[in-house]
Amino acid sequence: MQILLRNQLLGPARDNLMEKAQSTAQETMQKVQQVAEKAGQAAKETAQSEAQKQNLSPS
Image (cartoon, rainbow, N blue to C red; front, side, top):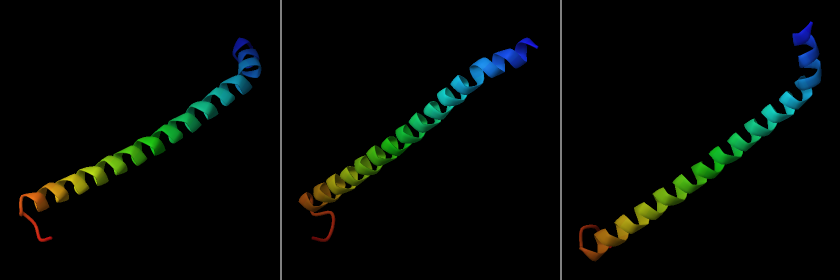
């Protein structure tokens, strides 16, 4: 009986909290992916630039 009452009282609040947590996690993952992609691109550009400066790659 106590579990049923607790679920009735806390169920919607728990559900809302879980939805917010899941949404926040998804947003964070998307931001991390974007940052990682930008960092990878920057590293590639830096490596290419340095290779050209040292005549290690075709111009």
